[in-house]
Length: 71
Image (cartoon, rainbow, N blue to C red; front, side):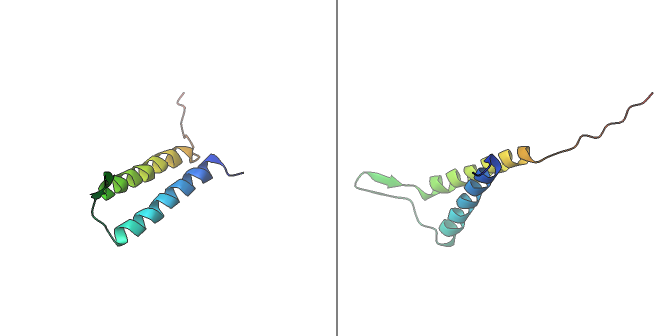
């Protein structure tokens, strides 16, 4: 079973792959028969997922706290 960090990394990787695909051949937003497709909103949503994943993954990294005591 994958860890939370692995799942978040997979979500980020998937979003980046889709971003690479849609930016390689950009399409205009359109509306047909009452159904709208907004590529700019889709792009923004994917960028938001990448930022979300970066934020969570940054918080999962191990860290050390160094301190000194003075007497």
